Length: 304
Image: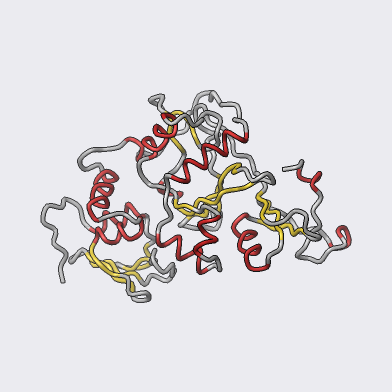
């Protein structure tokens, strides 16, 4: 069966390019639907259709994009055209170029304002099906995923999103991830090559301090990145804030690496976790605790 290409000036390989699918051999790619990594997704260039030999996901080129981003076929066509520079072209898809001269950095906004802006931003974003299924495979239930406000990094419409935030009175200056582009317009540091799951980092007081991104295209050197705008005009660093989940009055609090890992462990065990990026094991002789548990001292983290 051939895909009706009437009126289209791009093909399925262009869609594959926009989605940054990983090629394994010939016309076989890693499947973004079931998450397999051995090249089971077949891209039929002649017919402009796809099919995964593992999960049986299949369809035409618009469905490939639409199902991954929870949009209609019409919206998929519009967004693909924008990404390829066909028709109306959005400058917010162009890869942001760091300011090379001395950068005018912003002062970090108060945590209350950062939290307020991030909360509103999350309400404007969605979690695509691939990311939803990935989180469920890791052990999270749909209601837990929603409670943690996990979202997918958007590939388009960043300037529109930021403009709406500003018009509604939300602070963007001094909030990690936001910066001014070369035209002087506020935008946010989301890039197609860093697409993935947006993971809120929550403080002791319940404030969203920042985000980690669990990237879709993992490499030996990149699995998680921080949402930061430190290298851009009026940008600011996210730092490495600590994520806390559970009851801090608990008799035992566990220290682990990574917010997503700690959150899953909390829901599976009911225990309290303090999640630090790049935490190193501490010898049992120094803690009196087992190899996988650490008694938490608030002063050690500056009361984060």
